[in-house]
Length: 477
Image 1: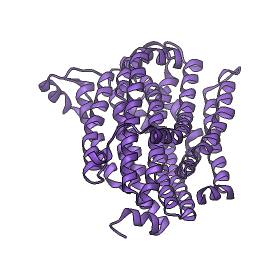
Image 2: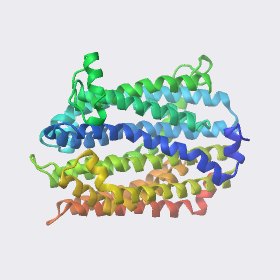
Image 3: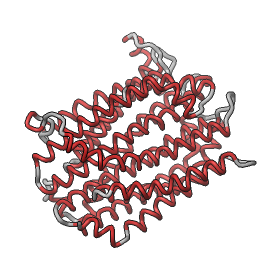
Image 4: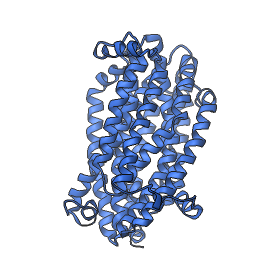
């Protein structure tokens, strides 16, 4: 059993195996956010007149780019659910065919969304979000690179998730760690160029000067992220081909429209569900920019840009545990073990809740130092701390809702999971945000209250749904 991940997933001690499998996935997904945190740190140490608007810009751009990533990740979720079940059934040919067809879909989506980002960056920043001044100016150029090169993150998440669906948790993490290390080196060179740079990064300018690399500031951060992700794809694809025998000639072929339709049919509810979660964050960012900022005072936008970068870490860690839940549910369901599949989702939710609580405590106790690490402006720090004071512990609810929703998706009930999240976001979060955002005497902390209540609601609704006997019947069926 020790050397066979499939046997461990289907027969090993469930609590131990879920923890063993899920922990590196949660860490690996959390590492995805380090790309943006590294950018925030480097940008935050530029000249003040550039750093403040740039931090606000990347906060907005990351949320916009995340929408496309989430749509792609929905396709990945559907693919991994199908592949996990085929793998649980021992259908190697079916796994290869699904992997290739899903890759074709992701490549097509990359081309479409890359074109939208390249041509429509200005409209998204100015008209959709309502950003103003230098934030809008810097954000437009940054978003063009970020979304234009979105294929890199789409493919990186997809291929590492395929590894996970086939029982590998450590290799994807190793690849992501390498990508983050490379991103740091490239970002230092491209952001600061020949200098100046902060003392801890003083090694960068001499190298940039020797290589003739110019000082690109915010643009350099975008290019560093894109290049690092592209280079990380090479070993990831190599592992899939050599170790898992995917994408080889015997598994490739022309587009199989019925299979693609099946993947898309499972994917669109998952994609929309995750888009709704990110759209809720983006809506708060937009409302904060419109209601609580001016052309000369971007404090709220900058504070939210930093806070949401840290909050995205909580989101992605939860998605990592959700991926573990999907794998265990899918493979055990494929092997005819619905009760074990159900319990696996519960264990993953428990571990997520513990990790979210630890993260919330860390943000609340060390929030001032963390925020000041990126931007030491007193107004920015105070605003971000106020946000964490209200929202921090609700990350437990956010994490539980994500994991239990992912477990439902792993069973193939993607539309049901979408309806639950959609009801919370559309019927409560959006109207509540509008009400408190434009009410007479409205304050920014009122938006934070709405976010916290929303995250708690995710947990309550998903727990009640997961405990229902009919959900077990779905698994058994």
